[in-house]
Length: 234
Image (cartoon, rainbow, N blue to C red; front, side):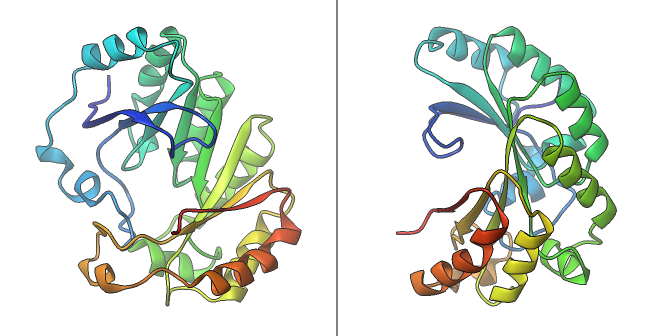
């Protein structure tokens, strides 16, 4: 089974309205400068494994308290044995949320078809053009990301697209173009940028967008999607 390098026993923030545990998987195929899990991206090879038995014991003992488990990273879908991990969690009787950057549509399709996930949160980093590569620090696989968007929107399961609003990177019109591309999507979450522990240390001195700017972005995006939320902030 895939190596697990992090385990948060209880979170109220990783699945809206749910009390969950969070499993973190190592490595990522993107290098987003605003990523706040830089250890998982850059230093995962040296991280100690969390024994699955420890996780299983906690999940079983707290089954009446927990609503589900979030599988995050890093990027979970880069691991070929991700389905094995999800099947193991399913056997424990838990609901599962998967976090992904959408770069592996085949894996996403397969775990959805197999009934191994209940909710998917897919990051949408930028408009689906040359700006995407600029924001993810690599050659963005746009065709794969577009396929993942289509898979989610036609899957029948619960999902959201989420966008981190990093100051100076995108303008209001960029966010509107992103929302228009996923038009009629169930849910779009606009997330406040956090300068803590970013992959690019230069971003540690950048303040999040002011509330007025966030509201202006939200007003532009809201007409395109069925539900829009703003997450984070003071």
